[in-house]
Length: 240
Image 1 (tube, rainbow, N blue to C red):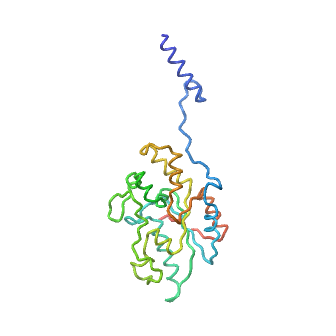
Image 2 (image 1 turned 135 degrees about the horizontal axis):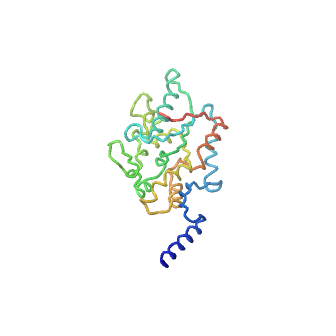
């Protein structure tokens, strides 16, 4: 009986230390989405994207889809094809229309903003079942590798040209900029805590500090989209 009393006493003590009444079960952990304040990210770089001076400005907002076609991130496909159609599809050749383009990465798409060191360290391809164009799972950021010579003077009808190159390198070459949702970084990185043995807070910092050139982390996509709209951008949500 004395051992039972000691057991019950210790149980009550533990429950009390957690702020719970005796007999209550521990609540599920609160989702960890730390606020990224100004000063913790490159605010000036983000605002340079926001305030680009152009007559026509289009922002593509990613969805939860990762690869559309094999080895091609859905958002990069939509950005590439939409941009090329706008520039070259409405005026008689050789005329073209200019368009400023940005991409806001949310949900799983944020992994395409990470460098190869992060893909290898966290085995991102293996964990998220991401395959390159050969259909095999890879732990390197396959979306970076260009498939063209990146020649801006190429014929846009040439399917091997930069205007049909679905890599982030080609999009950046054409002048695109990318904004990466910090809240999405926090949400997606949660999946890698158990496998890596690292704390969630550490992984969030690690990812935010290891983005590709031309990709800028910002606090949150909804606020970012609203800011872009206030500065003359139009929004194309990638939902297909």
